[in-house]
Amino acid sequence: MIAVFRHELSSYFTSLTGYVFGGFLLLFAGIYTMVYNLNALVANFEYVMESIAFIFLIIVPILTMRVLAEEKRQKTDQLLYSLPISMTQVVLGKFAALLVMFLLPLAILSLYPILLTAFGSVHLPAAFGAILGFFLLGSALLSIGMFLSSLTESQAVAAGLCFVVMLLNYFIVDLAGFVSSSAFGSLAAFLVVILLLALIVRSMTKSPLAGLVTGGILGLGTLAAYLMSSESFEGLFPKVMEQLSLFDRFYRFADGVFDLTALVYLLTVVGVFLFLSVQSMEKRRWSA
Amino acid sequence: MIEVTHLTKRYGDHTALSDLSFSIEKGQIYGFLGPNGAGKSTTMNIMTGCLAATSGQVKIGGHDIFEEAAQAKALIGYLPEQPPLYLDRTPREYLTFVAQAKKIPKDRVSAEVDRVLAITQTDQVAHRLIQHLSKGFKQRVGIAQALLGDPDVIILDEPTVGLDPVQIIGIRDLISDLGKDHTVILSSHILSEVQAICSTILIISRGKLVACDTPENLERLFAGSATLELEVEGTPEAIAKALCPIPCLISPEIVSTRENTCRIRLESSEDLRDLCRDIFFAFSDASLPILQMTPAKASLEDIFLELTSGDSPESAGKEDDA
View 1 (spheres, rainbow over the protein chains, first blue to last red):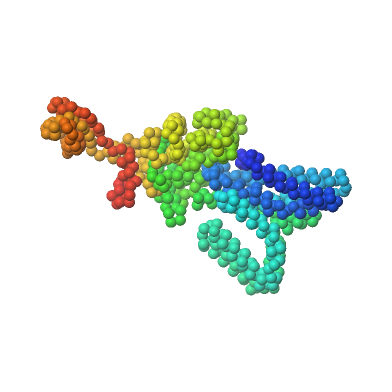
View 2 (view 1 turned 180 degrees about the horizontal axis):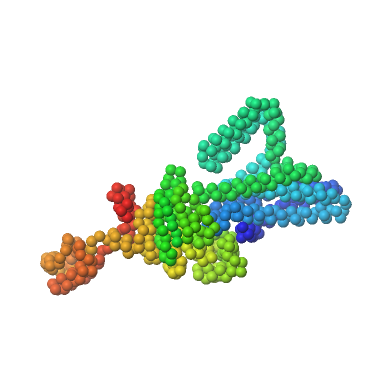
């Protein structure tokens, strides 16, 4: 695992990826710090973190697009499979390298609130709470990006897919607001999501049966729940989307709340997508 | 050293390997031979744990490649068909990574990398980016990677494909050297290559093992009766007269005559060496000079074609016998 970690980390520095990622993050953090804290003389650094959350849409695809897709394209995954290390170690090593790449600019960023204290009183716990939330959100998004990269052997496809998923994630709460708040509206929205899920399962497992079973169970379950108590479906879809949204969890931190459930949720997302990445890599052994 | 039992691999409806069983002994060079798409790479990928079999088992030194993957894989060095190289690295960086991943102790990594660079003669390019290396050197770096940690078994999938003749000879010499103290398994669809360096040949055709023997035995098995081709100076009548006293001659056949020489083809149920001796004395007694005498033995190429050709029931029957 340490070997993979070191190898990955050095590849971020031999290519431009690492610098582009860090540069982008610092550039936007710098601009917003200047606008909010220096020009507008606001003492809340957490506003900066909240405002720059949108750059994940760009930097996560940049950092994660090649992580597993490139191994597949260059056929170096064959080396990884034949080495006496498990896929779990490979995925963990790669993810650790991603985290370090993310932590480096974040460490520089952490100096900003401390520097700002020289010019006035800054509420440091809120500022660092927001940075912690930002880190957790970033980790969750990076693990999703990594999983998406394991699905394809083209960096461009991985990046595109990742961007779309990030975009959906970012706007999901706003989009869910457009769904009719009636019980039937929620039901319809759920069924559409379930249909999409079933199609994804089908295309990933290449088994129509698996897709049908997933879609069938979830769809029938939702229908049954709707028939039993249709009033509880009123406005449920936006609520569920709000709960699922990773960005919304981060905004809790940015609001100055140390939300333990949000912390657990984001860490769970990391765990789930790392697990899925390992499974996706293992699956290639069977069908590649 | 390696036990492969009842290996089957299916991709949907397509059967890539069906019920493949063989065992590999320590300290020899084995050659997997077969036409393109016969299942050589699939077999090797399964043996090295890169691919999962639909059914069947592979044991390396007693360790199952799936259940005890780490122990089994530690015994193997594998060069896949396309060398798995990180193009943005130098050979030294790349090999250091592989050495660390193979869990070679920290203090020995650098020495080990130097050792394999020296064996594969890649030390002079150790500091150039892999993407700038020639195909021959890339292949060598791939082999170097397989040699790290000095594994007992080295598996090379088509190690000489796409190389120029000088490079091919270089890689072949390297493999022969490795065969002195390692078990080497290589695949190829080039007969002469396998014949030149392997002590045992496994012929795979359409996912089945159709033959497994030494090159000499394979030739003997398929040689049939002893056949000689001769060019003799003399008239057909004189030659026929001279051949009369030779026993066991099946069919003296005059292939062609030109001016005062004849090409003849002889078949005998006798041993080839005895036949040669008899022929020599018969013609020398008759004062007919032999200009050329060639024993026609079944070449490995004939065997290969016979074993792997077509779907005719005749050849299918022969496959079962083999």
